[in-house]
Picture (cartoon, rainbow, N blue to C red):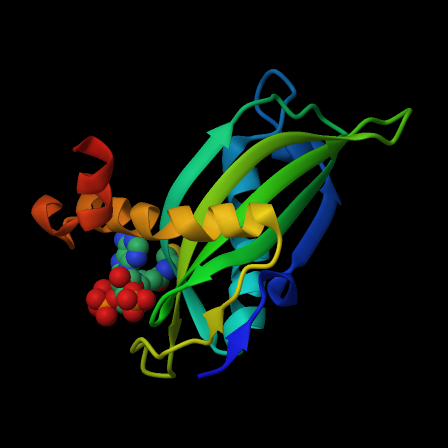
Length: 169
Ligand SMILES: CC(C)(COP(=O)(O)OP(=O)(O)OC[C@H]1O[C@@H](n2cnc3c(N)ncnc32)[C@H](O)[C@@H]1OP(=O)(O)O)[C@@H](O)C(=O)NCCC(=O)NCCS
């Protein structure tokens, strides 16, 4: 079984916020950011698996800061863990200060993708070996998040979610 690292799937997508992408108070529309994150995450999942990938779930998105019109927004996506056919992609979103160029974290998001064949049936993907402390932390927590996502989607019974039960016991 092939093993890859999270950095092999690293995808960086930078673009600015145009007037048509804002809400009535001049900040970036949430759906626009979701779409940019979906694109970046799907490329990361494709780089990891080298297969067709589909979005199975948007597990978590935190809109922590408003992103004003004209901002330069960077979505950084990496596969944090691979299971059999599914991959968790973790994203950090940064905005750039116009004058200093300094980047600050505005959002984090976690999406799940599944690698499929031409008929849309799930196929297996390479495993992943985290390298940095942050990658190891995200890798460790990913099984818990997968189980939570499956329970919320009605695809796993809460009593089968061993990782979640371990937190609440
Ligand atoms: C995603 C999809 C392929 C999963 O198909 P499925 O019949 O549930 O297949 P399986 O039960 O074998 O699940 C495949 C994998 O997806 C994972 N999965 C499925 N639903 C999930 C969810 N809501 N959250 C997390 N993982 C999920 C399963 O755990 C399994 O992972 P594993 O193989 O790594 O263990 C199928 O639901 C699909 O095609 N959905 C539409 C995708 C799409 O069109 N996205 C764009 C929307 S516009």
